[in-house]
Length: 399
Image (cartoon, rainbow, N blue to C red; front, top):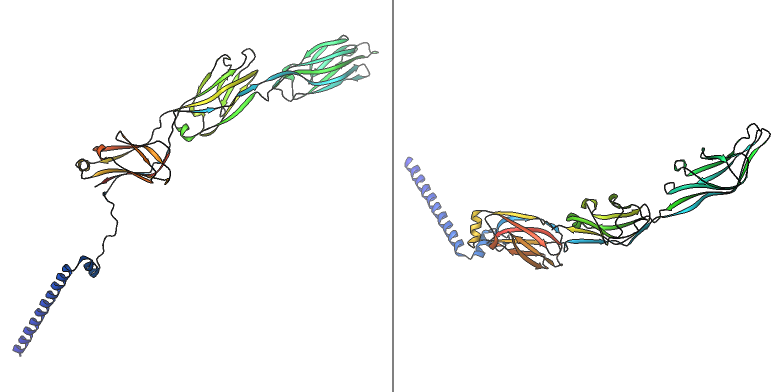
């Protein structure tokens, strides 16, 4: 029994060993077959996954710098001029009749009394001076009393004929004024009546017309000009008569930049003021005189601009990277990607102090700067020769 079982185990072990050998032979044949067939058929057979990512010639994958400069403005001139039209400002003072009355009559007795009045309107108190009351006396008995807004300005006996003008103090003036004419009492002569009759009563004054005393102009300042403004000067040639003019005031955006009487014989009056006075966009300038006439010609606001400070960009090169560039194994390329796909782009790329001119209509521009690189920090600046819109600036280490 035991001998039969042993014989069975021996046969079973031999069968298993034979199967293993057979499997090994089959596997070896398959591997040998796969190796011998063409690569395309092998990939299809084994369903190998191939890398479909496109390769960029020369790019090692080492990005040194990426930035978005955006709009880079170009300013061709060092000065910006804002010419102004001829400024003609003046005041005109003339005598005007403010109120008049043909006849004024007043009387006063023990049993009767009558006063007369005259209303005087003064619409422009600020520019009304030397208010005078003139009148002619036709009949007079007793003292004539004249009150202006309740304040007595005249009290005296008058003779037939013209009366010397009565001056009205400035502090009594209002926009609406009332003159009252009365006569003194007869006193102990109670049986009599004092009375006065006045003709051609007039209130006159020196009124200054100010409609043309000021002039307002508007000028525009661009963003680039405002950002790079270093000095601002207002220039004009004054036409005036020194003994006939008053203070000339000049305001820009509500701020006084000048108040005085300029030399009327000068060819040009230069007035420097702070650039902070000006706004980006719209600006307002006002010329104003208190007295007399000014004719200002060749008026101009001139901005002197500092050199535009274009931003600098930096990237680092390690010693190993630098050596590879020097030995020719790698290169350093700078790429500009523009927004505009049609317009001409002009400018200079200043790399480590070396300026390289570019002129292109392409949407992208690449430049090899391998000969100018240094170990450590490298600097890069874009200086436009016309305003540019740069979407992206990059520096890459390439093979």
